Length: 246
Image (tube, rainbow, N blue to C red; front, side):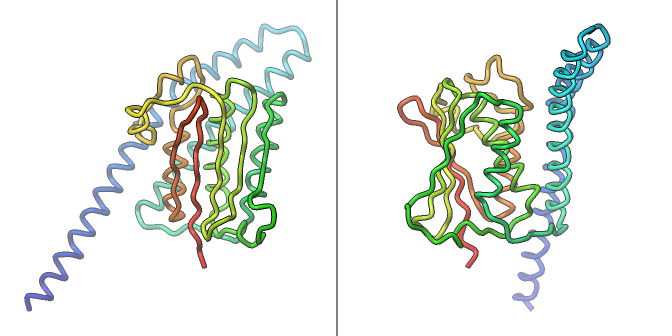
């Protein structure tokens, strides 16, 4: 019948779109890895080779710690890309009930071990809130990487070694606001903030893989959540909206 043919046509179109999207993402993933990671890996190898010329044991230990963190960061990005690729082709990921504030504090502890002079200020609003609103069903490694990317971004682009994190429990959906003072993005730049290979003018002289915000946006979309950027009075703010799962 006509309705059956229409239904088959719609399913075929949906399958075609999913296949096309999966192909595009895998294509972009390969481009990301080859374009964005080859330079940091080359720098990492070069810096490790320089360690052979150092005589001070303390200096060698310090440099090894720095390079280890860089290697871990590269590994995390590759793992996230692989996980997202699996999801894009229809594979399920495990999700467990976690507390978002625990994830945020874990990320802060990790970053403070690398940037001990950076100050993260964490606030909860309102003062009297239901702590159950901090619970969220998610894939913990992925959601942690999303927040780690955002907090790392605030470290790189803050002009006063400070960032403010606000966990807003005033509505049904939990919102996490991450703000730092520094050069903001123009309206034109904001249009491409979560696009592949985008680097704003404020990224000059900053080390990075150019993938953090792209990966964070994709991870959050997998969890039916979103991320937005706002700027006002020389302050950059990313707003993560974790939709209610009730």
